[in-house]
Image 1: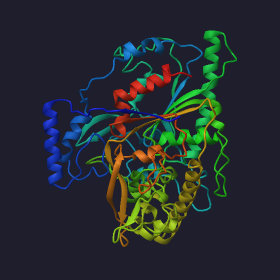
Image 2 (image 1 turned 120 degrees about the horizontal axis):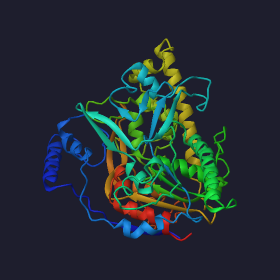
Image 3 (image 1 turned 90 degrees about the horizontal axis):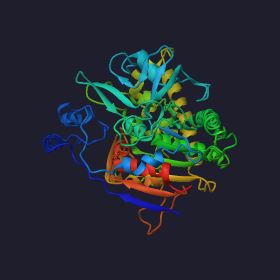
Image 4 (image 1 turned 90 degrees about the vertical axis):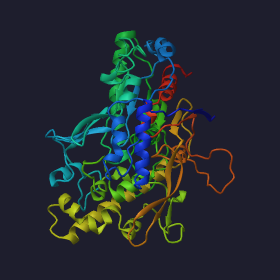
Length: 516
């Protein structure tokens, strides 16, 4: 049964002086036709450094003053009960949420400044991108870059000033994960997990690669951690036949990894492009799946990244569309064409063509199909001698990635209910106007947002819910292929969801006190 809880969270600034500064900066941005600063990192951050001064103030450690629950009084006792009924917890971060490092120690992602893989240089671009080659499958196209842990903080340099931006430190401290088992809530005295705490883990993965591939890695990771937890339970409690299942807390793209695993376990997508049988194989190791801002029906941000590239701040290098276009996982986050999100700029009619059809990308000159990206392709494909050869390799990679994405989304959209012991929870934002419909210019392929709808600034409410109702239909109840156990809405942005006190309160209840 679906139960919906709505948490109304007040988004205030730190002090009245800061509020005045932010409002002044916002007015300046509006008058200059720039994007208004928010607590999220907007898509185009490279326009004017001054307009982002309020955002800089927020990033360097200011916290919004709000009244929150007394977590210690609520959860101290249950948090210290380390018995056989407490499931181990695994945190799965979203896109960009895992550090990436090459075998020679070069930071590919997680450090923007100093010694890192700078995408403006040929060597840095090749480290950041995935390999492309004809005659090889996406799984065979590998490099020596590996996930190197969950990104709890992102170190950047803005205008020459080193800054640490909290990424997943909030969720890690909330759950006492790994080395952060008593950080924040433990050290501050908010929640005392006690010395017996041993059942929280972080799953880092290469978010550039295929999501189904990450799900297979998750399977082996859970088997490894299950063996560890079983050994600890035998040592501590003398029990060696206890059924061990995990509670998974997954943010954004991490929720797609977890959902695929829950449905199909370690099974790969069939090579013929069909959907695998819905076996719920992953349910053998999972009891609760908590999704946070997961783009179950895709996100417009993925389309803009693949078409326009991505900037992470003024004075920071731009990640070009052709570079991001080497990531199979990015295509698997695209919105569904059936949700009617792409219209023509000339007449506002629905675009004739599927977003996962390579011909659509060639028609509009997007990403790897953009002729103006040849300079980037020359860095990524140094052995390709001609422009024509580079384009042929790029279009081959584009077709393989889109074909894989079509099979993946079809597999994820199959309706079905999990085994009775599994519960699927959603925490999502619905108070921020989020890109919902874009118009494309026929000649240039340029995208313009023409409609916004409720969401968290990156993921629409209806995408998180996987809501299949059409706006013109009068259907009261949610229609979704996902059998939700409960849904909670927060009035915060995509990255702010895990920082919200109401998020922590609800997640700790689900993990520690909810009936099993």
